[in-house]
Length: 168
Image 1: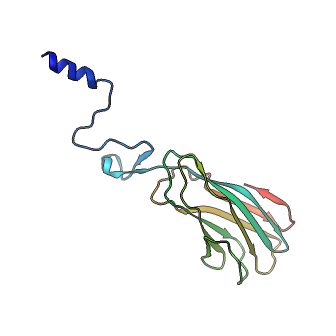
Image 2 (image 1 turned 120 degrees about the horizontal axis):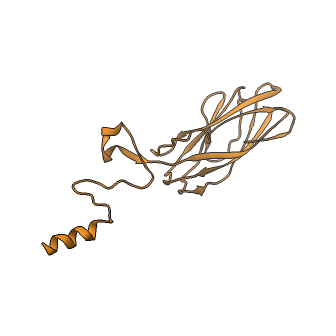
Image 3 (image 1 turned 45 degrees about the horizontal axis):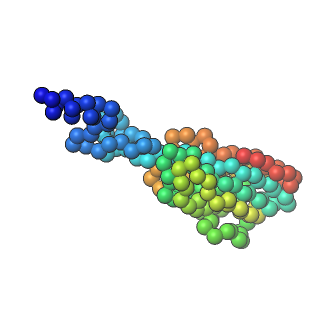
């Protein structure tokens, strides 16, 4: 009887898992309440903050990706979508590629939990030199990590062709 009391007292303050897997910090349930631990995926909170300006049809966008955690992101891709078509010829930075007449995709790379990524600096020319353009930025891939707070990794910015800098 004394041995049983000692074993119970030793585990009273600790988490005990029998015949299963303990939850991972920063994991979120997927597939409903009955999914079990096998239905959990890592959770992170990606955000993009930076600035954009348009002058004579040339758009300059620079922003820094950030992961507010709690889990790391193994790799991510951000989409930049303009309301106006881009000129046919563009010189894009390494890690960025065209995906249609108005879309550019850029690799963000891995982001540690509560970490800051490399700044992305992108210059594109708009077709026809419109007086304004709407820029939408959002995450299209996050390496299988769930982001429940989509408000800070989705940005919409109206930029007038004045040379003024707009911050997001």
